[in-house]
Amino acid sequence: MSATRYKILERLGGGGQAEVFRGIAETIQGFRKGVAIKRVLPHLTSNPQFVAMFLDEARLSLFLQHANVVQVFDISKAEDGTYFLVMEYVDGCDLKALIEHEVRSARTANIALCLYIVKEACKGLHYAHTLEHPESREPLNIVHRDVSPPNIMLSKNGEVKVVDFGLAKANSQVEDTDQGVVKGKFSYLAPETAHGDEVDARADVFALGIILWEMLTERRLFLADTPLDTVKLVRTARIPSIIAINPNVDPSLDAIVRKALARDREHRYPTAADLADDLVGYLFEKNMKATAKDVAMAVAEIKAHRAVRASPRATLIDALIKDEINQLTSIVAEEIRAPLRGADDDDGEIVDTKGWASDLGDD
Image 1 (spheres, rainbow, N blue to C red):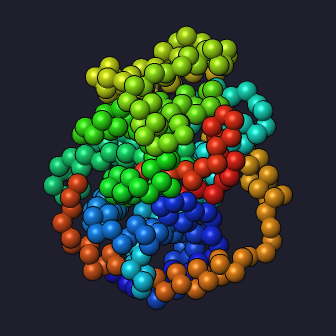
Image 2 (cartoon, rainbow, N blue to C red; image 1 turned 45 degrees about the vertical axis):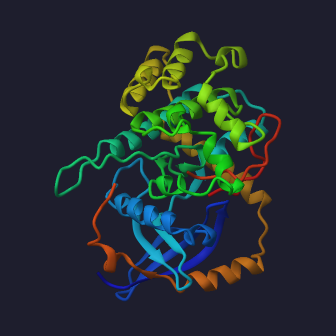
Image 3 (cartoon, rainbow, N blue to C red; image 1 turned 120 degrees about the vertical axis):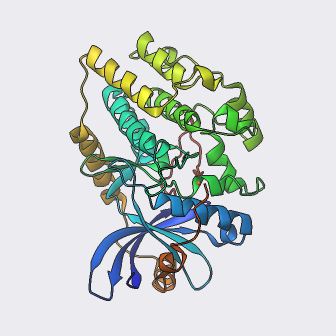
């Protein structure tokens, strides 16, 4: 494999676990490709257990190639020992930004668009859940474990892509004393995860149910003042009526969401594909339509809003970080033969009256 270097163009955002940059991958042959670089923060990479889990899961993420999954190209390491994921750059925004924009605009939820986005995320997750090793054909048993609005990307072309399979399991090993990390991830746990049980694909289905409930109500479902209280909410999994909050939602759609959010996973949708099938069936039955064009229009509106608010000046800290990360070199070539064994993003949020963050700077 030829040596690859990465050049940073701009910082896109960050949170309690990582920071994200837009960059260029360059090889000695002159090949240049736009990429996103997600840098795991130093306080996490100093944890050996986290690093081992992160590398195992990141190697698995290299197998993922699907239209609804952000592709990971490389695992990189800086001279200071911090780790990076080099991945497909999605020009657009994340789902959290879309929900926040809708809340600020005081709009009623676009039901068809909500269902379309979740349905597309279902496709990417089901692919990962059922993926086999390309050589042994053994199931990889990939579970995301951190399906949340910041981890669903929306492109300017209307694509919906799930990101961060390489961080979710590793992040579950971070010390609970790190308040910046646990607050976000606990809000999208499944009850079995909150009880410390083994998880399977149905944990990701539950997280999709949370997202769907929150999109339709424009409120947070499981969010309390402390991480412990948030976990208690997840464990009991009492689901308020969507219809009482949004009368535009009818009982049949409410039933779909409730099945995704069943506290007992045996009563939940067994696969993300099954949830997607019911969402498509509902849209067909109600003669409702949403496509990638609708996603693209929503993303364009958000990007226009950001452009108005953006400052043209780069900060000194961004310039310093850029110099540091320009020293990245690829470590995949030397570790590609490592045995495969087989990651939760914090929101870093400032909660408003509906429980949605007022800032847009997430992992």
